[in-house]
Length: 48
Image (cartoon, rainbow, N blue to C red; front, top):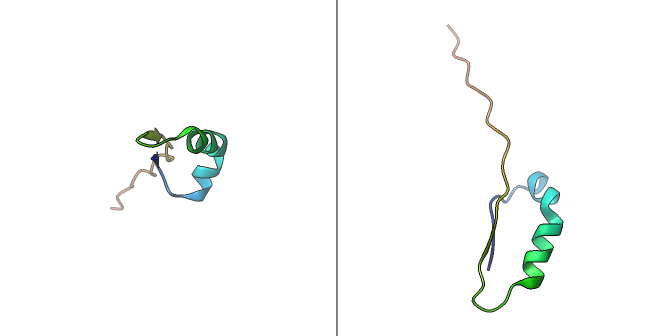
């Protein structure tokens, strides 16, 4: 099983070689988590 840390294409496409490698080397009973960091959320600026 290969688990991705995100399902958003703009972030996944940067990690394609790592994803392909993990899928290729996976086997029965294996587990791989691929960390895919999202950009920080913009800070909320309170009006008033």
